[in-house]
Image (cartoon, rainbow, N blue to C red; front, side, top):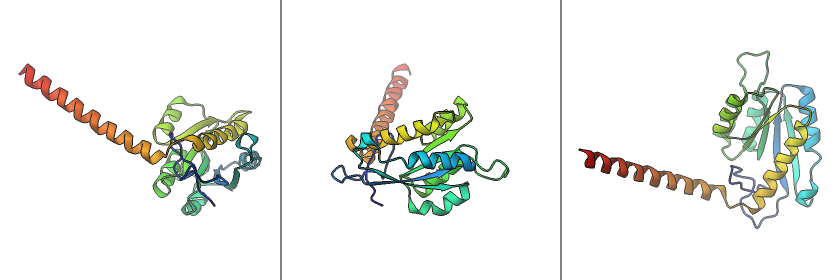
Length: 193
């Protein structure tokens, strides 16, 4: 699969060069509900999307649990769409957050979109904090939202600068900010003493 596309919010390996034409984007869908898994795969297979000038083909594969997905993660998919609650009968199974961390450890450039029937803002904030690209609540329109988010990810990536450069700039700004803050604190301590 040709990998291309980079996104300022985090799509790392989708675009390595803006000069290359995007042709394929690999997507893993992980959901323990056979119905939801089939539905998401069916909607995502409606690509190529007209707004992308029919230039992107999604290669969609489905997995019923976390362990199946992790066995195949060595293939480094561009995007993983996963349900927050996986294998509800198995208490030792990974949830979406734990699986997302495993995915990022093994394939750092893979982007994760979480879908869940749980509409808990605390969970949503935690997922975004730990690297989820987006969170979609399962409602009657979530399959369409999923397709729209992936479409937007791909469209924005054609125009966006390399994510690695943005990440490097953020680190440099953070270091400069910490150094400046430390200098100000030091000066205040010297002045006050």
